[in-house]
Image (cartoon, rainbow, N blue to C red; front, side, top):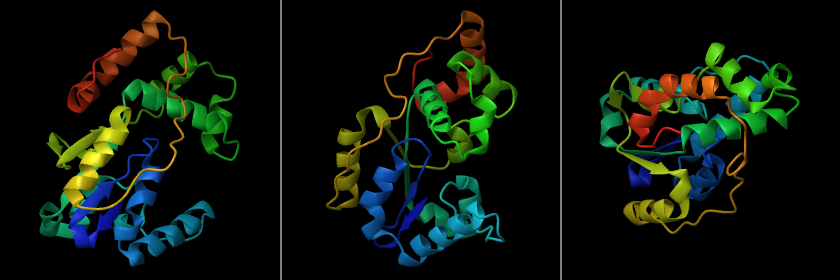
Length: 205
């Protein structure tokens, strides 16, 4: 999450949605104190040392916590985020966790097929992109852009913000990879994600 003071804007960084590339393109317009604070807080968190609970110093806070921290001024900002197809998002998380041995989730899903991984997610740690962008039925961003059309959408965003920025090469982890999903798991996935797909404007798989 980045505040762009001169542009009166807030970029919400949904993880595994090319957020690092977008963030890097927007860094020149961000508050330097926030950039440094987030970096320090992240290092302390990874080291399991005492760190700040200030959502402005987190890379991926829930946007409702940012709103509560900023108060009424939150709604004076232009707020935007990028999302991706929820199934593609899960594939990206799956492959990312598999290739990162230091992550706690790596040991939990090692040896799991994607089908088994989806079941594990739905049974234990189901997260949605809208968990971070919504507070109940209220969407807390003004614009939601798509990973699938990221070049065109980022160009629209850059024009809207009146910035000169382009995206670097993107690491599309999981994008386009073929996975096997059994019919019972797919149906359960559809039931669990119906609201998510409707809110983000994607078609159910």
